[in-house]
Image 1 (cartoon, rainbow, N blue to C red):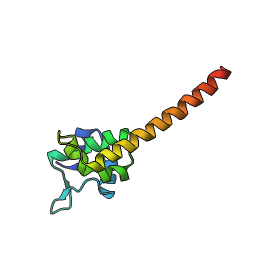
Image 2: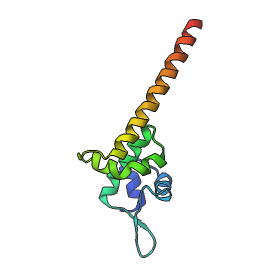
Image 3: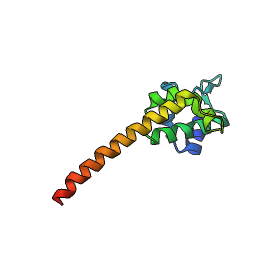
Image 4: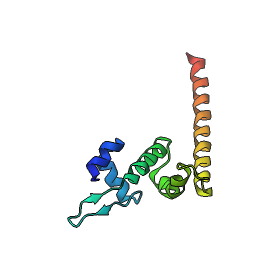
Length: 111
């Protein structure tokens, strides 16, 4: 499929798909005319990238764990790099939640 079809199937803009390619998250094949050609498996990869991004991981972090995420999300045991990346993100979220709770407590005193 071409990039427009991949965009329609995943809900990710063509511009963002090109960016994913530029940063090494995806590597589509090219036709003789230079058009990008994506496989059906690329739909799942783009969805994984979107889920991880929405969870707050940077694209650089996703690039590092994406090979492990492919297997983990397919039911395989996650590799250590994937698990470490997820644990680090959870710790980051916990720290932000604590800071927000403290901010809320302080603001509540003035409400």
